[in-house]
Image (cartoon, rainbow, N blue to C red):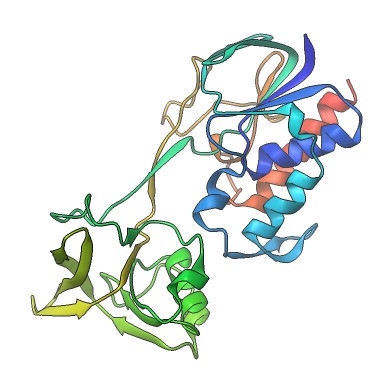
Length: 291
């Protein structure tokens, strides 16, 4: 039986693993997909609220986190089915540990889609900006009004013709992100119809939500950033009545020997970002390493 099992290989889980590694503790990290979690949805996003890293792109933070971990202690493609005291049942077998720390974030995410006919077969509709350089010289339509959509627009504005479409006149994200950037704005518009040829979208017809006017925007690539639908899995452990994650005490303890932190819990006053997640992880580490 190991000392620790970390369930979830997003940034908080990787940070936790790095600290345990530095203390020479015996641990195993289980990840259902690939290490990094939601970072893979916004690898180019500039993260500025984590003092330990300064101002870095998300993918660079991931690289730093992984550098501090023995890769042999990470098991990817390992789906957790249930968690009980000292025992984690998974698709790859059963693992035991004195302490189990859950850092699964908001669980499995599915991107919200445009919801238009032909979307599923269109190969040039993307839901994550993984390799911006591949869009150089392209005409790109970006749907969304949050910080990630604005980050994408800013990132691509120097190398692509960018059109940003949002259903409201005001953005949910910080509009200063795109100040001075070469971004064509279409407000307030929603996607109405796809013009598809073969497996490619050649244009998107958008509709003005106020006037119902239609406008056809030719494109090479469509980027959709309507957020994602999370599915929080609590593995049979105590959860909140509102189903927003695990029920924890002031020390982030779910029950004896089991802790949870990050986006898989909802703590009043904490924004769900990397920085507060690291603080929650530190609180758990302080307790378990001093035991």
